[in-house]
Image (tube, rainbow, N blue to C red):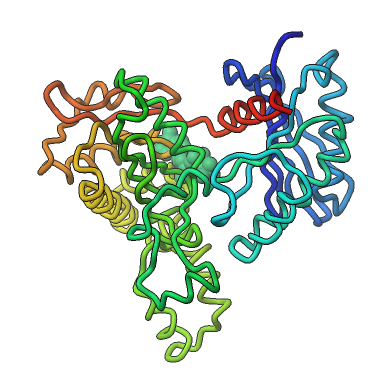
Length: 400
Ligand code: ADP
């Protein structure tokens, strides 16, 4: 009964990921996903002690009904579990310039998260719904907000400004914010441990490669640049997002090719990236399979993915000067030794040389250095954003 358990919630507009995490060691007691909110087939699936379970939620359920189900039908059914909860931690996508670190949620914080909705219109309103539902389910527990943007708030102005009229920054908050901050923070700390260095003396390039993908330059433990922008659309080639493109393409498609603005934005967010190039799938495993079969567009998608990433990594030599390690994380970064090989061979000018055996061994949750002796270091570190959220939540709850 001495465990420090945290309910970690990640509320999207039509789904909610949840997990019960032991903040001391990162163990996941329960994890699950409620999805298809506001639709007839709203449902929930979860895993507890290795057992997978699922059920339908009442038709058109959303955040509040899902959280009630999680509390009443899942958590409270486990003897003594709810009593070990010390906090609820919420993953918040956008904290604007307002939130530079995790905070205990009070009325002012809730208002601040709502204010940032214009920067993340799909996510922040859903987070607010999730927070309110969790507050009524657990009125006695501290609720903590952990922001995806917070880690990037240390970027200097020359990195976060766009070369647009300055008043757009001042009046409309147009700037680079960056995302995946919780993951970049986690791997920074883990890389420092693995390198046997103080975090404050650790320079890494962190490549978080999942369905969304971003890369961050971390100098002396602090973010100095990152590839995502004001929104998650910028930067690397992603599952369905285009990453960097010439902004004039949007005008060209609207004025010359008959697209609506909404149609173009939907295309850039949901029909581009690996899916758009390959015409097959946004899922990297399918791209790998088709590449093996000789599908040229799958091969092109992989090459573009690696090339863009390698160019970003190379450019981060500018702010960093010294690179202690390149870190690969996220579903693709943790599992695809082929992508890691492609990226590091594109960076051979810096001396990177893969050790094929070590590279192929670092999959399925295994951490390790993947470069040969004598090469600058690249490593795989499985990310654990939920653990960071749980740890921050316990820390802040204990100060209450
Ligand atoms: P999210 O951004 O949704 O959290 P993940 O970090 O789970 O995503 O990464 C999902 C991506 O990782 C998908 O493109 C998936 O195909 C890829 N992936 C998962 N396992 C493997 C694997 N064994 N080999 C290659 N890619 C993988």
